[in-house]
Length: 479
Image (cartoon, rainbow, N blue to C red):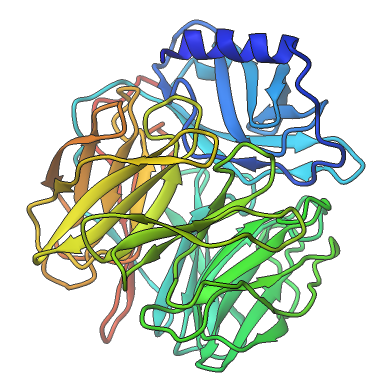
């Protein structure tokens, strides 16, 4: 379905008086807008935003500036983007705010204003030293600046490292280290207490004795000392979302990797930056790396996770109170290693992109969502590289209007790999990235020199752990 026909159909749904959820909580934004990017100097246009929990009065913000918004239903909004918003090459920060009571501001997604290119090339990296044992990585918006920021979780030094984007010349600024509980393995960012400042969640520990550490932001690069919450798993991944629709972000934490005898845990947020005790998620033994989104369009956040043991992607629908229904499995070609959630074919429904290991090669597949909780598993695409992937990312990296993927390699032998999106959920081709010298894992993306092109950051281990920043080099807009 074209973007235009999708919007028309959505408007007809709105006319049919689709009810708004009362107290919809903190909205959640999916990866993948329609269109996915825009060329510098283009005319004003209507952007379709998808996600979950959009209540009556929900408003889209473009770089913190409100724009005229029309609510189609709880999962779709349209917003009027001005010609002045896309006059030059840059990357816009997009959020959605639900009104009070029990409202809040969504996670941040990005929209690139860039010239279209057939592929991407990464330039030789810039290197930034990080603390010992850096294993967790997130790139995002900590201080609402033009350049992306980075946080790493450092398992040996029991810290998180904060690197703020340099808004004058690009790149990253001086590293600041903040103490956490022991052995942090994962990190996430979000506004946990609704004060407008970005907070940090780190997680780790040991088997049977894990910890979630909360570092509340005070603005800029200042954080309160960590407050810890115990759990019975060694946490390897954390995802943030309003699971019970009360206007406060909650935490879904999963074990570090397969195999694990016990499953994921939920910490319900209280809205002031504190959390309730750890509660178990039934049926999640063996799962790790869970991500959240709304698969069935009911306005309640669900989750999906790789299931390495049985060669599937596991998922469960949220109940709206912080619990989940029965875990279901969608079979794929091999042991699932990593997933990401995005609208891979532009139909307004959330899909699952998964990379697995098949006969010594990494294999990519898309599970196309139908918006009602069902999935169609597309044919696999071999990457032709002997990868051990930890991360798969989805974004329109080359500005051609189709979501692409990027896959890392934790083995230490292969460069990272770029998959060119076909627009229908499939990947047309894979190739190793020019400029990415050796394997780096995990990876994240952000615009670190505010030119409208998504760059890549990655961690490398060893005696001298390093954060590598690879700028994207493709035809750029004139500034």
